[in-house]
Amino acid sequence: QVRLVESGGGLVQPGGSLRLSCAASGTIFSIKAMGWYRQAPGKERELVASITSDSTINYTDSVKGRFTISRDYAKNTMYLQMNSLKYEDTAVYYCNGEIRSYWHQGYPAVWGQGTLVTVSS
Image (cartoon, rainbow, N blue to C red; front, side):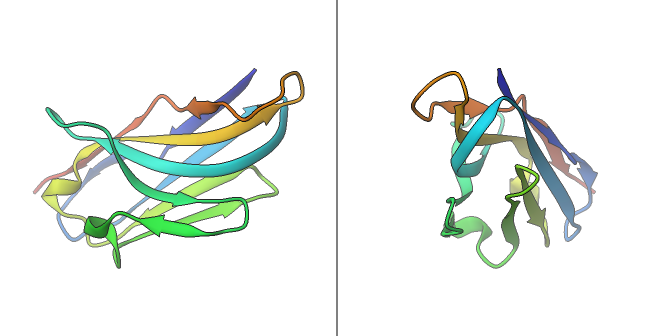
């Protein structure tokens, strides 16, 4: 079994910062792309940022210059540094990874359980 576990969410004031972590565990053979998604109340889930196995990075326009995605490949962990947070960043943040286990071929998408980020004064 492979699982992703997010941490680091919480309540922060506008203009503040948070750092999210996503740790992959289990019988991991390798990981391709990973990404952070978010879902605000009443809205569809959207891709926030992604990072491939060769460190190619993409951001959605609304977070460019404020959020930074990174990976520690040795620890199978991904991070999202969020600065200058705005009210509209409030959402449940999910991590996603294309992960191959030792027991199966292919790289199915694996999701974490989500962590809530609330930006409020």
